[in-house]
Length: 306
Image (tube, rainbow, N blue to C red; front, top):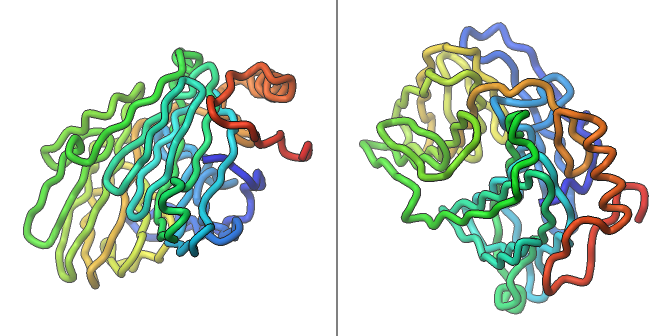
């Protein structure tokens, strides 16, 4: 999804004395015309968690008949987008020719590499009837030696993503490996992304064999050690800390993380280890040198050039 508001410094932060939590990032919320987005990454005090450099929580939002999401074609470089829905449906189109609806429990993984363009819209049939949508949109940076790989797109259906159900817990490992499960999603760097749903009173140890971790409370109430988690906030965990999660009510969380990749530049929809590469991408988009998305006639101009 396009970064339609490039000011990342509106988040609030709280340094912690907690033995498990290093930092709490309270997102800045924006109304994008009928639905809200909460953005936790990037933030001025914490640009990345592992390879993750962008974290948007969309909705839940209700769309009346005739309304929907319309993210016009826009470009990306040197990153991969990761789209995951809790409710609803979004139709993806890209400059490689893919047309793919994404539904709850599925993963759309789009590797931008040297450059890709895509759009995201509400499917026509849902636009006619009205619908509800609730989703996460994440980006991961690519390792320096692989930032300019060929662009690619892969859709992973819900039945391909492993689930573990145990007493009071339902765990879906979307990316990486944990809890004896291994996701088929192909990655270029060590990455972890888990959907966690707990019944009230359930406890769950969190994976600690990963360089960096962030825990986001989507809904409900939970504690980590002696600290209550804040809803719709990103809790950056201290490296290597053995942490046990406890559900104070039925709750829903996601855990993200992985090995850090080093500093990255980010501007609008462009991510790179080299600032000159971002300048080149700006010029390429302005001059129409990116590939087009078949069936689309609109596009999002560079910020400030509407």
